[in-house]
Structure formats: structure tokens, C-alpha cells
Length: 118
Image (cartoon, rainbow, N blue to C red):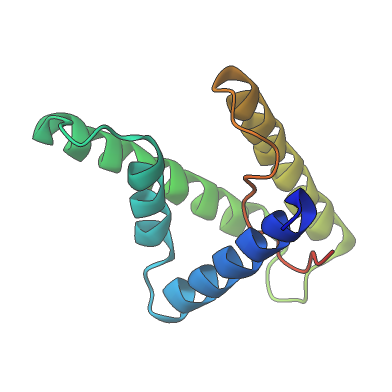
């Protein structure tokens, strides 16, 4: 199986997991557990685990609250709303690329991107 096919399979699996977690009200928790599985050593101290989980959820809360605060109220998403969402997406993608470079993670390990299918 080629790199492109593996990347597509990874995206499809991540999409399915994301949709299921979202439907169960556990989207952030699932993201946290995926981060733990991918990056934490098995013997991480309990206090470090607890503090990192708090930081992860605090970041998620900040992003969600910020999105809700910048959206134009009482109407469908406006052009400015969509621009703000796009800027958030680009900011997070830039972070992800920097993280991957710093940790030598290959580009075929990708997060789900809603609406993106190759």
C-alpha cells in the first residue's frame, strides 16, 4: 500500500473516530487520549498526566470560547466568521507543521480535515 493510500486510510479512520467522539460528547477527551497514546511514556507521573490534561482542556476551552465570542450573533455564519475560522485553521496547521518538523514526524501522519477527501 502506498503512502497516499495509507494517509487516506488514516484520515478516514480519524474522521470516523472524531464523528463518533463528537456524537458522544467526548471530542476533547478523545483528542487528549490520542495525544497521550502518541506521545506520553508509559511511566509518566500521575501529577504530570493530570497537569497536562488540564492544560490540554484549558487550551480547548480557550479556543472554543474564543470562536463563540468572535462569531456574529443571531445569524448564519458571515463572511467575517468564515475568515476567522479559516485563520484559526491556518494557525493550528502552522503549529502542527512546526511540531512535526521538530519531532521528525512524517507528513503521512495527518489529522482529520473536515470535508477534505483525496
